[in-house]
Length: 102
Image (cartoon, rainbow, N blue to C red):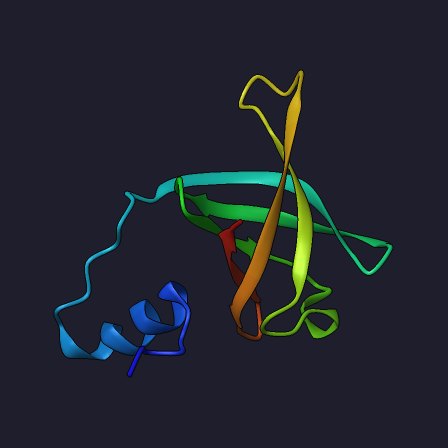
């Protein structure tokens, strides 16, 4: 039978085994971002990013739940342009949340 969990959930479950390996290398980013959920805009800080996902620090973490799909506006390091990506929330903590890009 197929495993019904998403890739992110399987990765999170494997973290405790010591066997965990990320598919993509994470890079520290620390840039202010805006993300939208259900028609509302929220502010946050992109702590780190990879080709597969990111971690967002935000005071609005109580508005976000596992499985939510957000639109995140990520500024280029030059600050002159940004890119918008759809992302699914994998998990939340007291400080923020992790997403996988769709």
